[in-house]
Length: 244
Image (cartoon, rainbow, N blue to C red):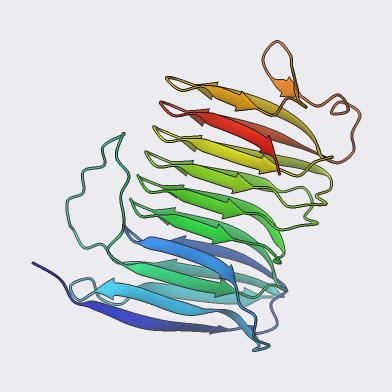
């Protein structure tokens, strides 16, 4: 029996925040996070769908000395979900969240089984931790970021991570799937070391990275000031690291 889908409009004031911890849990829904382009002085805006038997999502926001903590969480539907390790899922609801690109944000995102898309281009991001029980995961990282820590994981879908141009410092990208394909795209000229493993698929690594005993590495990695350490893993799919 179909359930009515309702929509909550999100608008959280900026209140002088310059940094933010953003925690989002969509239960089993789909999630899209990007930047807003208007000049409105808000921390976050967007639309949060929920089923009529769920009730409104819970939200809390606190700003202390320029540091904001924003938490958004869907209420459980108590619907039994079976997440097979080889099957991808699609959520019944959609959350679209737009963050202030001028606020340096640490983003944690979770879905029990929906698709997650994080288009963080043009934003100030310090850390990303995103997971879904079975959906696809797509992450676009900003240009000119520094010392990023990124963890993108799904139980059964595909994972794609696109690293931005001009990254500086020591960056870490970890992309994993229980059964799907995993792709990481890296700009040319960035020093990198890659740890690639797969249970049943194959590893496809750009030939500019030379294979060592347990990794693939660019010739300048050890002495590079600006670099990225990449770990890609799939239980059954292919893993692919290529230059864009």
